Length: 120
Image (cartoon, rainbow, N blue to C red; front, side, top):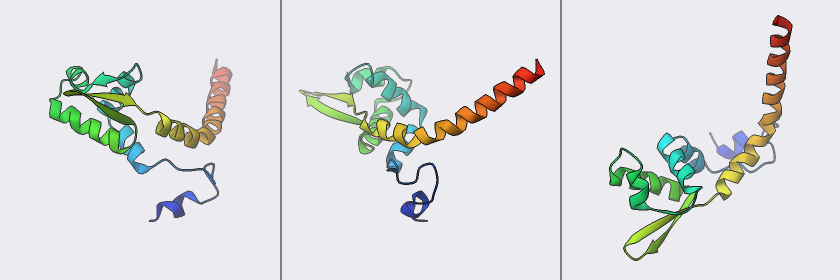
């Protein structure tokens, strides 16, 4: 089914830009989410990143490639090393897309709090 068709319905996201599927696929993996958390503290070399996981360097390199393809990180060669930097713009797009759903969850949590108050 066409992505454009699915996102043009009258819903909380109607009229909003939907982040690229690559971003959601990249965020679906816990190793890649952890890599982004580490890079939020500043640029790191590929070796430094690989040393933080119980994974082989090629496995971490594959995760970094997925993040690069999604536009979530960029790499900068520096001599024989590559420094990876967080690119947060796609994450802001995800946040913007999720924002309308906060109203739904706030309402649900408010209802839950009311029920819990009645029971106590």
